[in-house]
Image (cartoon, rainbow, N blue to C red; front, side, top):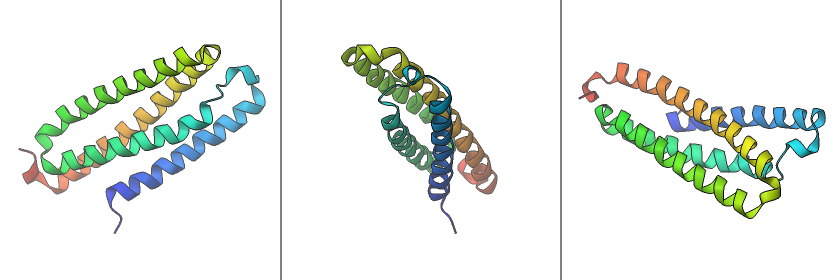
Length: 136
């Protein structure tokens, strides 16, 4: 039996692989100046951050569903603050790579946030249906 975390990890790696393939295809089509030199390092960063966030959200969901939404919103705000700190720090240090980095960072932020949110919503619906006593 697969745990939800292992299942998410597998889906996240497949999703990341698809994004990397799209990046490689785009790197042949678009000019090199469109891509940040830091882009290959952003993939492991987003994978790790998404895995960590998903792990804490699963733990929160299993404890008490009624507090899950508040914790989800708090985790999302903390992640957004963390991402802004990373992005601003990089841009201040590497000003020549600022625009490609910001665009790449934002696109990956959207992709991974949407992926994580969809995964959490799907799992939470199935979890609540299987465990109605945990809703209060």
